[in-house]
Image (cartoon, rainbow, N blue to C red):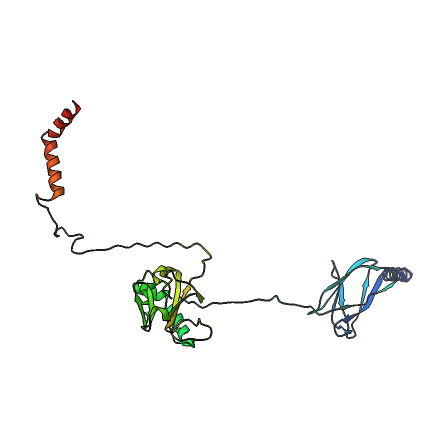
Length: 298
């Protein structure tokens, strides 16, 4: 009985030794390529399996594998992941694989954030006046809606120190046309009248204007051919989508509309139109017009 047990134990030890002798060994050192130093506690994995290990304090690793061809994956937090293919492991042989990992470069793309403040409100115009180095007044599109002005000439006359002559020409601080300059978005624009310096303001509808700035003092960035002031018309940007507007207007006269008791004119017998109408009616009524047609036919 004891001989049989010893025989089985010997056979088992021989089988285990034979199985261990069939394995190969993968060894190596993992380095940090940036600092040229060892990389401890990095991961060494066999791709497609759960076999793996980590490097020690000196960056060394040891991994026992069955004979075959493997892909070894080296990784570490903050470093690039490297895969090495066609690693051939043979039985009872040691395969040395030394490599290195570099830091992972996470370069962000450039992001440019731009923002524009609204220029069509009264608050924005007050902010422009506050920050301006010039003596400046103005009106915004919000103010245009409040006063109900349809064109710029009807709106700009509400600005202090500005008057409109002839319903379209702007005078600033009481000075004549030759002392006033008109610009569109900061660019000089010629007028339709060659004898005048300003542009006819009734040509600009208020629905295309963000604001109008009246500058009453000169600086280096302004044209030099004015004394009274510069009227700068700031238009709206081109819309990036379709916009539709609908407007309805009407008038009401309480002395005539919805009132049956209103003044009218009944006419008299001496009125030319009424007299000719009455005469024609009488001719038709008495068949005189028909008899005249018969006589003309014969």
